[in-house]
Length: 184
Length: 130
Image 1 (cartoon, rainbow over the protein chains, first blue to last red):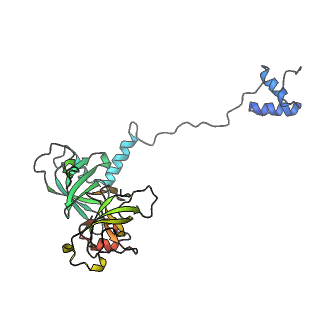
Image 2 (cartoon, each protein chain N blue to C red):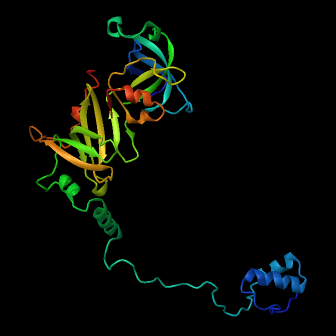
Image 3 (cartoon, chains in turn cyan, purple):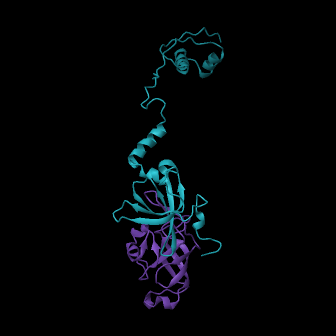
């Protein structure tokens, strides 16, 4: 098959595949023929075309230079949820007011009924804004545990009732729970 | 997490002391019962008659009775909308009739606030609500 060196009969097709199909239809070639052309080592001449997609440069950062977005968000939320800082003070280890495991506190909730819960602090989970305390108490001779998110808007106040009799040797007082093996 | 064969305390004066769960209603067969869920129970043991002097004989249940009940406390902790997590030291229920009204006339002990929806009468009768 003596095909002449190819010149594009149709202009303005940037994609190679389109070129070939247009070429085929122009030259009334069979599919097999066109494959042969593609595999024959010929290179179709193409004009260098501009990319149709415009790549934009990133704009200037909205955050101050060198700042951590996560930290900024946390600062902002702390301002919103704890403007006076009393929540932070109660649960920061270095603070003299800090609550410790074994202390007894009353949690006052922000509800219409002014619901409260008194209990011994069993565990403090320090995770920034996600900090929570687990309280345990006995209500009508039955153990009840409640874990409260410190920074929750539903918590109105923590009222300190008493310090632990002795400074506890553990951070988590799970031993306050009844012994399952012994029964009640 | 109340399933088939779970044993619960009964905290009303219907006469039952311990019941065994035989079905959790309104759920698939693989979902656990939680506070506020309705269950079918079999009465396993009853309280002594002395304690139940005030209960009318009509309302008393017998050992082996199949009754409906509503779960009022669970050992498995449950979370509330505001992130608070609550957990009790035992599993307990209150016997109810088909209409959802409690069979007994008194409730002893704490119940969860979640019962307010659908079982307001139990919450009203309970001495303590957490």
